[in-house]
Image (cartoon, rainbow, N blue to C red; front, side, top):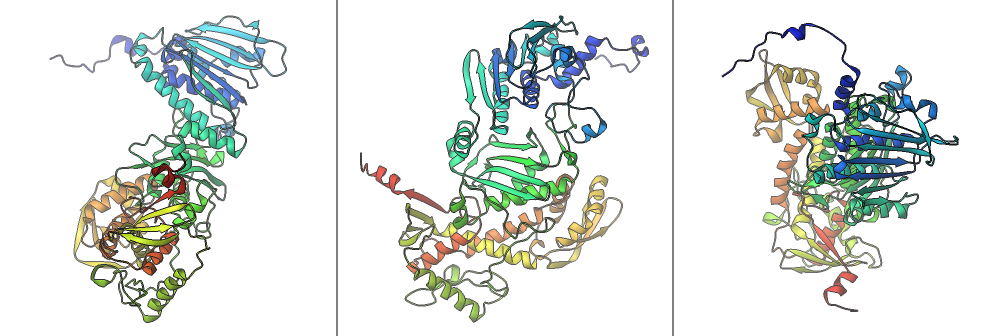
Length: 625
C-alpha cells in the first residue's frame, strides 16, 4: 500500500496570484452548488429590484437553461458591466450597511460566479431609459460589449449550459428530475414568502406553478391553498404576535394536522428563507406533548426582527442566520406558537383561521413561564369529583376518585365544583357551546353530543386524561421548586466543554431544582434533584440538559420528564372505559374540554373529539342526492 507523503512538492513552495478565471470558479463553488443555487441568486436579485412579476423558465433540470425575467427597476446601461463584475453590488456601501443587511442578495458575487461556469446573457432596461441593453459572456470573464435591444422595463438573465467548462462539477449533478425538484421547492418557498408578487415556473415548456399577487384575505387564502394545500388552510391557526421590536405572523397547523416528515415547515426571517436549528427547535418545543409520537408539525411563519439584531452574513448560501440575542428570539418564538396551538377548544374553534393575539399572560415577562391557574381549584385539592343527578356526588376514575394533587380537597372546593357543573347543565340550550350538549354514551367509551354544526363524538377517557394532566401541570408550576435531597449524591462525568456550559447556566439548574458542585476537573456531584425525578436517570438527564442549553440557552427537558410522569399519573387517574356517566357528568366534561388548553388532543397526541356536520351526516345516508 502506498504511503501518503507530507513532503511539499516544489510547486507548492511558490506563492502566486490566482488567474482571474480560476478565482471566479473557486468563488462560484461557494455560490453555485447546483442549478437551484443559480435560481436562488437570480430570484433574490429580482425581488430586491422591486419586481411584482417574475417568470422562471427551466430546461432539463436547469442544466440546459435557467431563465429569470422580472419587471423590476432594471440596470442602467452604464452599470451593466459592473453588474457582472466580482465584488460589485448596489446593496452594500459601508460597514454599517453590512451590519444591518435589509436586502436578500448583497455579496456582489452572484452574476460573476454564475457566468464563470455557464454561458450567461444579461438583458436589462432601467426605469426611465429609452432602450434596453444586453451583454453576454462565456466563462473566464470574457464579455461582449453592451448592445441595444428590445425589452420591457426589468431584467432578463439567461443561463445556459451550466458547468460546461467545469466537468468535475458537472458530473456531480443529479438527474434532471431531481435537480428540478430542488428548484421547484425553492420557487415554492419564494412564492410563500412574497404573496404580493405574481410568479410563474415553467419546466420543459410546461407550466408547473403559477400564482397571482394576493392583495386581500380571499386571494391570500386561495394562494395558500395552491401552495400548502386546502387541508392545511382549513386546519391551521393564523397568528400575529409582537413584543418590543420583534414580530411573528403566519399560520400554524393544529396539532391534529401533522406530518410524517418535516416537509411542510417554512420559516422566514425578514423575508429570507432560513434553515436555523435554534428556530426549528423552538417550534418543535412549542408542540411538545400535543403531537402524536413521531409526527411533525406543519407551519408557515414569518419572523420580523430589526436588521441590526440579526446577522445574515454567516454562510455563502445565506441560509443560516445568527441573532444578537438568540435566547430571546427562541423564547419569543416558542411561547407564541405554544399559545396558538394549545388554545382551549372553546377558543381555538372560534379562532380557526383568525388572528391570534397575545393574551395578558403572554405579553409580560419573556424570561419565566407564566401559566394561569384555574381559580376554582385550590392548591390543596387532590381529588376531582363530578356530580350525579341521582346520587349527588358520584365520582369519576379509579377507585371512585381521580387523584389530582398531594392533599385532600376541602368541602368548599368540592361544593364549588358541583355547583359549577349543575349550572352548566341548567344553562339555556340556546347558549352556544362549541362541543354542544350531551345526548348519549356509547359502550362506556364515547360521548355523543349535539351542537350547532351537527354531531360531536368525544373519546371521554382521552379528553378527561388531558384535563387531569393540564391541572396537574398547573399545580407542578406552583410547587416546582420542591427538591429532594439525595441520600447518596450522584456523580456525573462530563467533558470540559460540558462543564463550561454548566458553569454558565448554574442558576438555571438551581431554578429547576438541581443542586450540584464541582467534583474533580470534569465531574459534578448532585446533592438535590426535583422530587418527581428522584428515580430518573440523572446522568443522562443532565447530559441532555447541557446539550439543550448549549444550543438554545435554556432547556425544557426537566418539564418534559416531569410532564411524562404527570401524563402517566393522569392516564391512570382519568375516567376509564366502560364507566357509565350521567348527562350532568358528560356535560361537565364537555365544558371542561372547552376551557382546558390542548384539550383537542390527549396526552399522547391523539384527537379527543371529532365533528360531523349535517352535510356529512346527510352524505352518509345519501340525503338530497
